[in-house]
Amino acid sequence: MQISESIHVAVPPDVVYEQVSDVTRTGQWSPICTGCWWDEGDGPRVGAWFTGRNETPGRTWETRSQVVAAEPGREFAWEVNNGWVRWGYTLEPEGDGTRLTEHWEFLPKGIAGFHDKYGEQADAQIAERREAARTGIPATLAAIKAIAERGRP
Image (cartoon, rainbow, N blue to C red):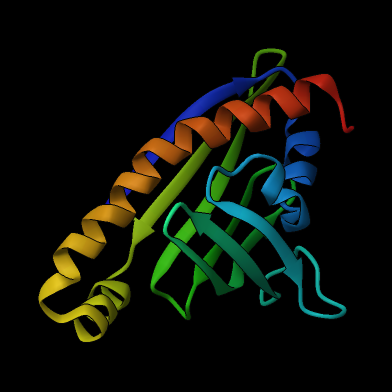
């Protein structure tokens, strides 16, 4: 269960990487995640932990995530809830800028966890999360592009 989309950003990959790997800025571009913060002393490196706050019209919740890929200018990714969902960005040079791809994958551990947590409602809950990723990824990419191309505020 995976979704990914790409967009061209007219700035170099290292600049885009600096932006997307700074999870404290996520609330600037995500339609659901309103903010993230690193565990004390952590930052964008493999093994680092952070907390994210998410909001939808009927719900507010926090998640714990761990960075699983941190290659400057190439890839930044994290897993939510100890391997339930993987989110990330890959970056490739493209013309005068970057081909930025956002990836979302609902992992087998997450699917099993949702069945344990939600029982008969698990499939509906999983479909809701998939739809949020399907609509949220293009919105997120467009916002990252706009912010990157106008420069850091």
